[in-house]
Amino acid sequence: MSDAITFHVPASAANLGSGYGVVGLALDMSLGITVEPRTDGEVVVERRDDPSAHLEDSRHDPVLRGFRRGAELLGANVKKGVTIVVEGTIPRGTGMGTISGGFAAGFGAAARLAKKTCTPSEALDALVPLGADPGHAAAALGGGLSATATLSAPRDELEQRVLPQPIHQDWHYVIALPDLGMGTAETKRVLPPTLPHAATTRAIGRTLAVLRALESGDEELLGRALLDEIHVPYRRPRVPGLGRAMTAARDAGAAGATICGHGPGTIAFTTTSGRSAAIATAMVEAFADAGQTATTLTLATAFYGALPTSTG
Image (cartoon, rainbow, N blue to C red; front, side):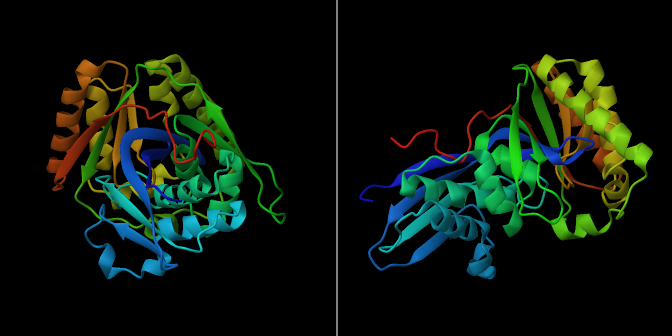
């Protein structure tokens, strides 16, 4: 390695209603990754995207862990060392996939150093045991819209298949971000350990309907299919104003709205870009009515990911 390597890793929204741990959507807000050569044998991650990174144990950084796993799996030569510089403004702790995106960034850096291609499925099998979310990570690795199927039995070695899904070009996403910190572990603890069979049947059907609606641009179908019984009802009480914001988005012209990832971010969908400003204003006002300050982002689909598409 004689020259720096640069690439981008998209933010993501996961779940999208009932597709809990399965559906992922890449968003066109990214982490910029630069891999620079060293000569002292050290592997260093420099987090310019996160001002508080110096307060955390760098050994647990998902970029570093993803890089080491990728280097091990793909045989990247890192004897001379590298510095991985991470830049970007994706808000942390909002449900936009910064942890899984970090794992994907590190793995993508290793793949480029090894000059090897790797399928999103192979990368996902390596990263989920480290703590990556399947939906977020699949979107960060490959971009676009994806669904992830776990093909292995519960006690067998993990085997997943990332299934890229077509998505209509007109979708725009308005994401409201209330000023409320929520950790992934905290939001998982509120979920029930089991669900009724009838609820899981309804969830499977709605997930398929969400994918079809996103493919076809069918706003009416998406709005109805986003109804969820798997995780949203249990997470909604932890975000004051979330229910109001989802309703306000629909009233302002959105096809529908739901929690972005684990939250507290809230994502609304529209195929008419001219509606985005009104949807954003309505969501901010709804959170304000609940005593929450919120900001918004208006984004489109990202069709790039952390993995290299060629070895050249």
